[in-house]
Amino acid sequence: MAVDHRRFLTDLHKLREFGASGVGKGVVRPAYSDADIAARQWLAVRMAEAGLTPQFDPVGNLFGLASGRSLLMGSHSDSQPEGGWLDGALGVIAALEIARSSDRPISVVSFQDEEGRFGVTTGSAVWSGGLPLEKADVLTDGAGVTFCQARSTMADLSQSFVDPSQFSGFVEMHIEQGLSLDATREQIGVVTDIVGIRDMSITYEGQQNHAGTTPMHLRRDAFQALSVFNTRLNERFRNVVTPQTVWTIGRVELHPNASSIVPGRVRFSMQWRDSDADRLVRMEEIIRATAQEIADELGMALDYGPMLGLEPVAMDLTLRGALENGAEQVAQGKWRRMPSGALHDATNVSRLMPVAMLFVPSINGISHDFAEDTAETDLIAGLEVLDRAMRSLSS
Ligand code: HGY
Ligand code: MN
Ligand code: MN
Figure 1 (cartoon, rainbow, N blue to C red):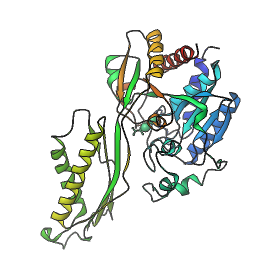
Figure 2 (cartoon, rainbow, N blue to C red):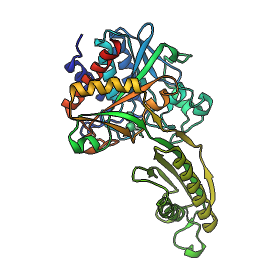
Figure 3 (tube, rainbow, N blue to C red):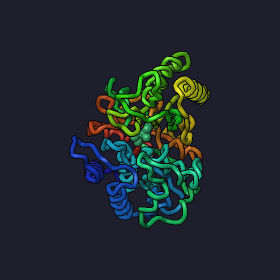
Figure 4 (cartoon, rainbow, N blue to C red):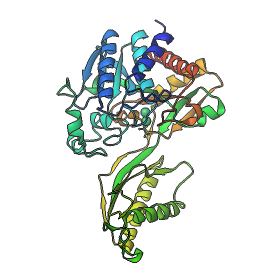
């Protein structure tokens, strides 16, 4: 049976209704929010209608299982706090459409908390054995809710994890979330490898005090510590990084966050990514040394949260070859091989089985923003590539 473009697009738009932000096509569907859980329940019904057996695992990863040995396809359906409608959702709905139309058994998955409300790709990290459940359970979100508390709000969770040995491999379709394909008007990217990441929180504790009466030279101002840290880190990284290396302080909690109080405490996220595992280690050494130096200079107590991370991984050559053949048939002269600078569940799944990934363009390279979008013709081209690849694998 051929893939049904209309049914695929209709389901993609239907999934967007869960947590639709009201701004453009954006969604607000963080892991374990009411919108996320409702979307997963809707997906479970769609899986059952496709002849798959839906199963929620103990952390809320949703599998739609084909009987017997199958190829697993999918991605995630949770979003960033301000997310786009395609990040993750595209891979899940494309997988559903392939499962409905393919002659070979295809299972579908929507992993939980890929966007890292609690960790880094938490649901697939736990399922793949990369993150023990007891360690995941004590991770907290920005508001102090634990992963254990959040997952216990989901009903219908199975007591056991899905056995990965029933799957022969994993294929994930995703938007690129960068500028490469859009800039050159190419339609398809076949992923060669996915970068590695480290992520942890850093806390400086100084002395909270009155902003009018505390002389500058006596202050132990936590915001000043963060400010100096950021500037010095950027200088120190210069000799170590490449143009592809990235690092981000994306969340800052300043306490008590009031204009007439010298801030006594700051907790902030420190994340860095690179395709070279050794460089990730070197960067960590610089971060820790710089943070300690500033703590000593400014009289701050320094504390670190748990270090989370994923190593860089290469895609499986056989599955990748099938995607390349599909790309050549659907988008001749308009596709390329490329690395992924964003993280994906495929990194975790590669611990268990061969994995491969396919990208379609992101308009203006924008993602993790309500403005994220992709041309409909490119969404369909991606689905067609997947379909051709699956057919060539079964023959
Ligand atoms: O952050 C990432 O790369 C992914 O979108 N969670
Ligand atoms: Mn994603
Ligand atoms: Mn994302």
